[in-house]
Each structure stands twice: as structure tokens, then as C-alpha cells.
Image 1 (cartoon, rainbow, N blue to C red):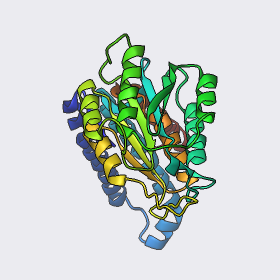
Image 2 (cartoon, rainbow, N blue to C red):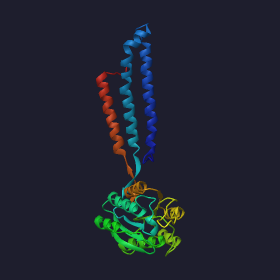
Image 3 (cartoon, helix red, strand yellow):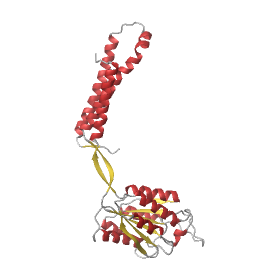
Image 4 (cartoon, one colour):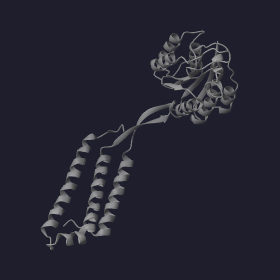
Length: 312
């Protein structure tokens, strides 16, 4: 748990509260032992075991309440991922001939389409999402939009044919984002989610495209689809280029994922849909901690009233 405090000095009260609670319990135990009216210890245990156990409950609750309230005074805060209102996400999907391989059922492209459709359901409605397809050339199928029906139609229209132009897909995605954002990409407001199963064979080099993405401050999240045993109907082996996709993600500040079956690629897209357009912010949780402290204090008071526990 990544917890920090605005006023950490207040945490000094926590061990003091615990020490006082322990001292109170010990003091009450010593007073009880000093006033034993029964020489027969077995009789004493039979009579007082349950009340003794109950006697410590209010004290424990009071110590817990005081500790939580001390934590609240320290003003705890935790980081959390929250949606950005101005997020623009480009889906770049490989539609080269190798996407017809059936090692990912029913075949690679259909699995990618199903995953992308699930992504559109997971990503917040306020996000602008566009679609780029790439084979021998790259094309912007759907510019960034909040119209999910248009996006779904674009995804459904994809067909597998041609070579692989990963570099062009990155460049076209960046251009679409820049055009949507008024000619210049706003730092940290855009993401590219690129799915491919092959090596770059056409167009702009991957290195040049990555340099451009780095300059624009756009992270690229990559998904390598397929297995090393992927084979086309003509017998040609088409394993995914894992190394290239890993480098693209690492060098741009994104993340790399490997998907070897339809379920895993769908899960990856669903996971990315939940956080790809978020930013990490720090929020205070003082009210929550204080609420638990007050609740524990009320329970302690109820226990004292219920069992009539006294300090002496």
C-alpha cells in the first residue's frame, strides 16, 4: 500500500496510544490479582473467565479508535488512477496477411477485433478513441471520436491482407491525434494501443516512428498476438515479433503484453480499457480513517455501557 502523510509528525501519537493501552491493561490486571478473595484458583477461573475477557474489549476498541484518530490527524493520502477528461486513444491494429493464422481461434484478426470491441465497452465514454489499420500501408479508419457505434463499425470492417507497416501505423496515429488536438499533441493526454503479429516490413522504420512518439510524449502500449507455431494455410510460419514490440513499449513509456489465445488478448484489451487513459493523482483519505476511528469509539462506549466496565 503506497500510503503517505501530509503531517507525519502526528504518527508519533500512535505508539504512545498503544503504550497507554497496554499500561492500562497491565494496571487493571495487577489490581485484580492483588484483591483475589478466593484461594482456589480453579473456582476463580470458572467464575471470572468470561467477564475478564469482556473487560478488555472496551479498552481494545478505545485504543483502536485513538490510533485511527491519530492517523487521521496525520492526514493520510493515497495515489489512485483517475480518468483524464481530455484523453485521446488510437487503436492501431495489424491487418497484414499473417493475421489470418488460426493459432489464435478462430483466427488472429477475428480475435483482435473481438478484443477491440470489448475495449470500446470498457473505456470511459468521455474518451476520444480512433482506429488505424496497417498492412503494407497504414490508414486512419476512424479519427478520434466519442461515437462508439462508428468505432465498432470500423473495427468490424477490417480484413487481413498485405505486408506489415508498424512504423507507418505509429506515425499515422500520432498525426491523427495531433489533428484532433488542434495541430499539436498535448503531453500526457494521448495513448496508442498497437496490436501486431509480425515484423515491420514496409514504410517508416520502427526506430524513426518511436523517436517521433517520444518527442510527442505519447506512450505506446503494444500487444504481440499469436504463438511461435503460427502457420498460414500455405504453410508459411508467422511467429510474432516480440522483441520489436517490447522495445516500442519500453522506449515510449508504455507497456508490452503477449497474447497467445483469444481469451488473453480480450483480457488485455479489457484491462487496458480501464486505465490506459488515466492519470495518477494523490487524494487524502483522512475522512475515511476518521470515520473508522469514530465508529470504533462508539463501539467502545457501547461496550463500556453493556458490560459496566470500570477503570478501577
